[in-house]
Amino acid sequence: MTVLNIVLSVVDIILAIAIIVLFLVQEGNDRGIGVVAGGSSDSYYNKAKGRTIEEQLKKATVACCILFAITSIVLYLSIAKSW
Image 1: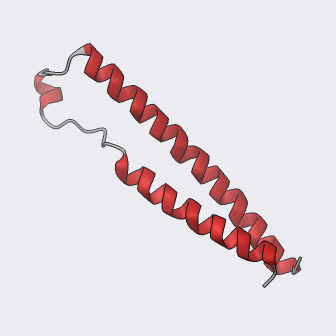
Image 2 (image 1 turned 45 degrees about the horizontal axis):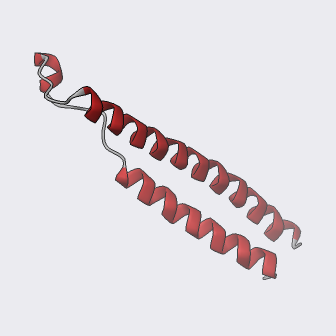
Protein backbone atom coordinates (compact mmCIF):
# COMPACT_ATOMS: atom_id res chain seq x y z
CA MET A 1 0.00 0.00 0.00
CA THR A 2 1.15 3.47 -0.78
CA VAL A 3 1.04 6.43 1.55
CA LEU A 4 -1.95 7.79 -0.39
CA ASN A 5 -3.91 4.59 0.21
CA ILE A 6 -3.13 4.63 3.92
CA VAL A 7 -4.14 8.28 4.30
CA LEU A 8 -7.35 7.77 2.34
CA SER A 9 -8.18 4.68 4.41
CA VAL A 10 -7.72 6.57 7.67
CA VAL A 11 -9.81 9.51 6.43
CA ASP A 12 -12.49 7.07 5.23
CA ILE A 13 -12.66 5.38 8.64
CA ILE A 14 -12.82 8.72 10.47
CA LEU A 15 -15.62 9.93 8.20
CA ALA A 16 -17.54 6.68 8.70
CA ILE A 17 -17.31 7.05 12.47
CA ALA A 18 -18.37 10.71 12.21
CA ILE A 19 -21.42 9.74 10.14
CA ILE A 20 -22.44 7.14 12.71
CA VAL A 21 -22.03 9.57 15.61
CA LEU A 22 -23.88 12.39 13.83
CA PHE A 23 -26.71 10.04 12.92
CA LEU A 24 -27.08 8.80 16.50
CA VAL A 25 -27.03 12.33 17.98
CA GLN A 26 -29.96 13.51 15.87
CA GLU A 27 -33.44 13.38 17.31
CA GLY A 28 -36.28 11.49 15.68
CA ASN A 29 -39.15 13.22 13.90
CA ASP A 30 -42.00 11.37 15.60
CA ARG A 31 -43.51 13.10 18.62
CA GLY A 32 -45.92 10.40 19.63
CA ILE A 33 -49.66 10.78 20.17
CA GLY A 34 -49.27 14.37 21.39
CA VAL A 35 -49.21 15.63 17.81
CA VAL A 36 -52.58 14.05 17.04
CA ALA A 37 -54.15 15.47 20.19
CA GLY A 38 -52.69 18.90 19.49
CA GLY A 39 -50.82 19.10 22.77
CA SER A 40 -47.50 20.90 22.68
CA SER A 41 -45.75 22.29 25.73
CA ASP A 42 -42.74 23.65 23.84
CA SER A 43 -42.32 27.38 23.54
CA TYR A 44 -41.31 29.04 20.29
CA TYR A 45 -37.79 29.60 21.61
CA ASN A 46 -37.29 25.93 22.42
CA LYS A 47 -38.65 24.86 19.04
CA ALA A 48 -36.50 27.34 17.10
CA LYS A 49 -33.41 26.48 19.12
CA GLY A 50 -33.93 22.78 18.49
CA ARG A 51 -34.43 23.28 14.79
CA THR A 52 -31.24 25.23 14.33
CA ILE A 53 -29.20 22.58 16.12
CA GLU A 54 -30.99 19.87 14.15
CA GLU A 55 -30.36 21.70 10.89
CA GLN A 56 -26.67 22.03 11.69
CA LEU A 57 -26.49 18.32 12.49
CA LYS A 58 -28.29 17.45 9.25
CA LYS A 59 -25.95 19.66 7.21
CA ALA A 60 -22.90 18.14 8.91
CA THR A 61 -24.23 14.63 8.26
CA VAL A 62 -24.82 15.38 4.57
CA ALA A 63 -21.36 16.93 4.23
CA CYS A 64 -19.73 13.91 5.89
CA CYS A 65 -21.68 11.54 3.64
CA ILE A 66 -20.59 13.37 0.50
CA LEU A 67 -16.96 13.46 1.65
CA PHE A 68 -17.17 9.77 2.58
CA ALA A 69 -18.47 8.87 -0.89
CA ILE A 70 -15.79 10.90 -2.64
CA THR A 71 -13.05 9.49 -0.43
CA SER A 72 -14.27 5.93 -0.97
CA ILE A 73 -14.31 6.37 -4.75
CA VAL A 74 -10.83 7.89 -4.80
CA LEU A 75 -9.57 5.12 -2.50
CA TYR A 76 -11.04 2.45 -4.76
CA LEU A 77 -9.52 4.04 -7.85
CA SER A 78 -6.14 4.44 -6.18
CA ILE A 79 -6.10 0.77 -5.19
CA ALA A 80 -7.39 -0.43 -8.58
CA LYS A 81 -4.96 1.72 -10.57
CA SER A 82 -2.19 1.25 -7.96
CA TRP A 83 -1.27 4.93 -7.85
